[in-house]
Image (cartoon, rainbow, N blue to C red; front, side):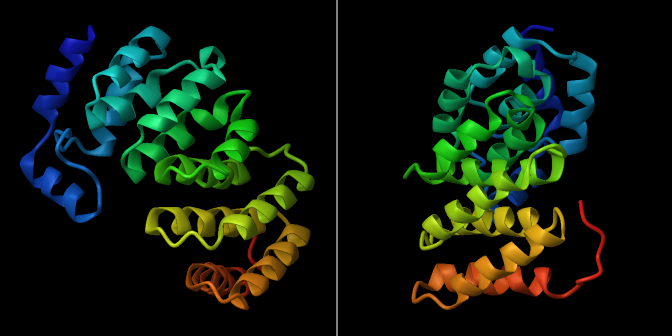
Length: 223
């Protein structure tokens, strides 16, 4: 299917009620059709991997088309420059997180871009950095613990950012890194306690919320 055919398909799958729900959850609905995620995933499987099509879908600016682009792109053909360009285009938390889960984590540039984006000022670029850290904590089974000590350093550096979409991603990264193994749990708990003791309201929230999960089930299975 061409991009225009896919956009027409997406319009047919959408509904106004879903668009209204997206707006309630802080998702920009002005360029969205209201297509549910299971339908997007099914369409992604139908289309298969296609790098050129992914670029076309992203360029449309349509919310669901950008999620679909993250599902059909070919990770091995994604350059760091493309990742940077897509990160700059992000304007909603769900497209951000879907890109990290579906595509960015699978590229060879994932760790480098996560570190770089975590230092950026732009709200959704920074969120992408910490969302990518969180996703890598779950899926990169071979990553050494040293990678996650770098995540804890980034968490402490950026924990004072009180923008909601940023602080939630910072919190997510801290919790997921702490669930990898017992040693990283101890390091994450120590990090969270330091944050809880700071004057910054955002840092205190991140630390307190992370501790509720990290300290609540010490016998839970690790990732």
